Image (cartoon, rainbow, N blue to C red; front, side, top):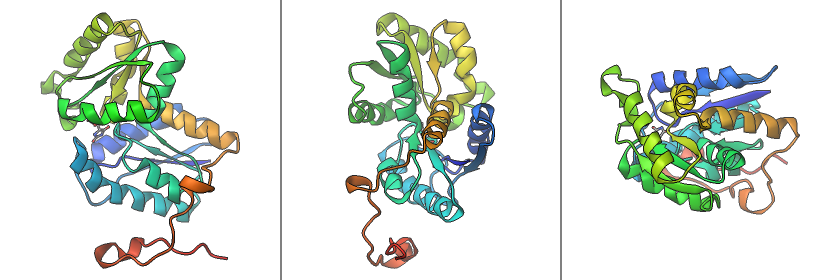
Length: 248
Ligand code: 5HY
């Protein structure tokens, strides 16, 4: 089974971090292929970054379809381009935000999300409603550390995130924490030990969700909303991305 894990930003060190996390949980016979777009934002911290990253993300899915990839993980907490990716992919596509939020809802009646910048809180809030987990999500919090500062030893990221999680458990009445960035994947186990509650990382949750769906022989429905895009010409720089008619 081949699972393609796509980091939609263009920072190679983050793609490597995500690849290691994915590989650490992948089952027997599962090949993890990690990728990032060539063009786009070095980190995604808002609606504009998301929009600009989505074309590159979809190009990586198109490449995967040509290579017979069985399933995809979108390794960015905004789940950018998720629905569009499900239109063009045969196999299951899972975003790390959806995977983490659904996983948390199995483990606690209430969870809090701890994400990076305050300006990205709204993106996670929109996803809480989109995925119908408002009754489980007690609060979305930000620790105001930029995405690319997470692996900067001088940013004191771990202590800041730990403090925000402790506040969430006290003030929000939550009993589990969802990590709101792919760049936090390597902090998950240590945070869970230090907090004594389930801390959910979306990268590893999403890989196992895709693996389970593929093992169940399930794939994205091509009836209705996630049907292949209608074939039509695209103009200008995107003409090579025009949806083609399905070979008869
Ligand atoms: C992520 N941005 O997981 C999101 C996190 C965020 O580049 N990878 C990014 O802050 O929304």
